[in-house]
Amino acid sequence: MSVALLGWSILLAQVLLAAAMGCAAFRVLRGPRAQDRVLALDTLYINAAMLLLVFGIRTGSTHYFEAALLIALLGFVATAALSKFLMRGEVIE
Image 1 (cartoon, rainbow, N blue to C red):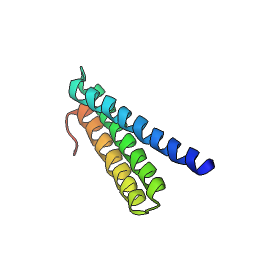
Image 2 (cartoon, rainbow, N blue to C red):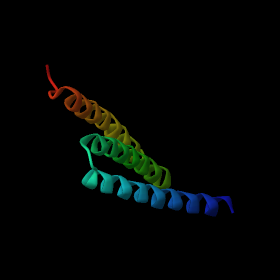
Image 3 (cartoon, rainbow, N blue to C red):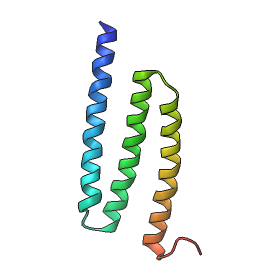
């Protein structure tokens, strides 16, 4: 019973994370302002990292966890750079 419940909850988590990524991608494409697009991009990379973590739990492979860590690191740097660019107009001073 608990193995079946775990399988269904992992599947439900994957479906809901994919739906959240779809909503964030819609906001990236159709955001009214640049700030909304940066926030949606931040949400998109967080959802992608979480989806990779769920895949890693489902398959038992550590490669997904390493990929999620790389996405989180690169996403943070990208969000910081885009935010600085929107505030000051340049990234490197």
